[in-house]
Length: 384
Image 1 (cartoon, rainbow, N blue to C red):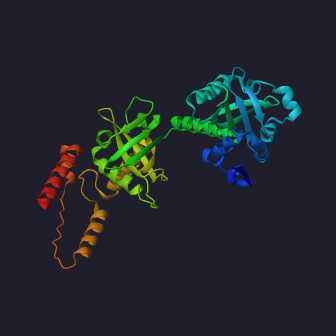
Image 2: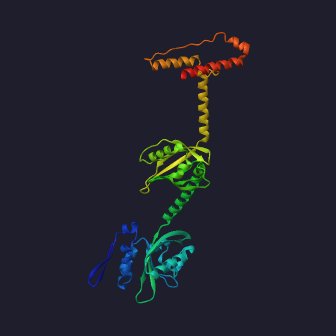
Image 3: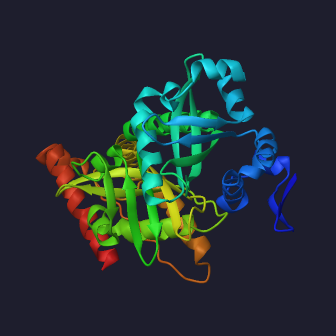
């Protein structure tokens, strides 16, 4: 759409935007306001103004910011927002724009428009209306003051865009964010976000992680690498740093690792860490980690390992003398000969004759002690 006005024999183009541009592109002062304001100031261009206004789907108002805040002009786009025809509009909004502004926002809107007139600067803000069957709608208002050189009256030209759906989406996103925040705070696993810059830094940790690390805070923020080293078992800290660095690499899958937190002066908390690089939000490298407390699992693993070792020992050793039994000795000898085929070995067999006499005369306990002494001396001789 192109509107042209004659001025001193020269053509002047006020608006050169297509309808689609008006519908889908943000209204800017250079594209719309300056041109419309120029039209408003000229009585001879009212017809061109009307053509423009009728083709803009956004609401357009010309408001006198005097004592009553009268609407001097509204376009069809505004009437469509209100679900009004011109007659109904005249009946319902005869003088004051406060008739359709949400009551909580009335003072705010007035102050914004008055401030714009006082400063002679453009304005933009969001506000609510109740113009459609008491239904609350959100509008984005942007505009500029228009000074009348002949009178002291001040006017503002306002363009309104319906942003109700956008506000609803923002509110839903806000509710979702609050719910997610609540979930994260109450998860039974630790959640952390790490920053890898010059050094490793813990930007955020939820309440569960705070407890696992021995802090009393509900959440933890901005822990330096030095502070982290005081919270992680010394033997595990370098492994932890290496793991986070590997997790920060793009498209690299890292298996989980087990580390120990030092809680207080002596208590150790075993945790299983799974970390992954976060999506790029800036030029910083961020890694999120999930910490699962595994104290009971580790205790069970240690118990199982001890039990297995105990059973293996009992299977291969004589419990009295703590040396290999016959079967284990034969297996060990066979393995040694297989591993070292070029070496020569001496096999010595000891047989204590008539040991039963010692048991009968001195008792079984004494006999067992004698066997233990013999076994210890034999083991020391071979090892030494």
